[in-house]
Image (cartoon, rainbow, N blue to C red; front, side, top):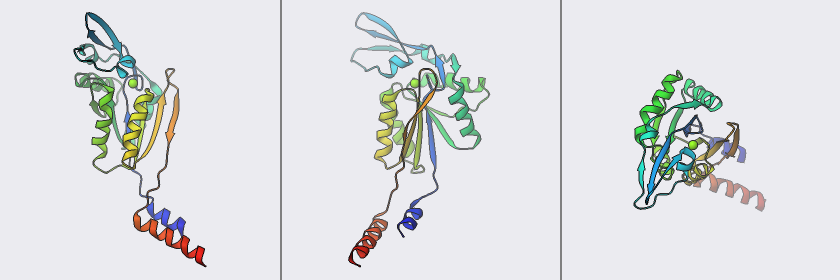
Length: 206
Ligand SMILES: [Mg+2]
């Protein structure tokens, strides 16, 4: 009986696939120019992913609007397959919105349709975009492809908070992939749970 109840619970899965851009789909050499005090430094995408804003910092994103990328074939092939199967895929990038046109061009240059792109101007804003995307209530599974473990963890936190199954694949520096999370959450309604408890109790009493 318990098996039957759990089977009833399994809804058709609708998965949202979320891709990062830099060092996940493409290696690029764009930098953000940071002016802090009297010093100027350039942050590449990896350094910018862990950058923390300090008051009076001045950031120049103009170079991030330029997307000269060397594609990462393995992840791009996965995204292509997802798109061909008509599944939902988006890009959430820490780049500023000015970069969206350049990323779209990267896809057309590689004969692919561009997924929807959310440019958050900093990694700290990625989880809020995820929350907004999940607010439709359409999804019961999220798969993230990312090269930054911190982002994988932060995105996982907000996905799980909504009781949604979370899987993540980390793109390593040499472009190999590691599956970081693969989770299954079986959610039961209060009614289903009370039925299970009653049956357990009945068995105990008999
Ligand atoms: Mg990245």
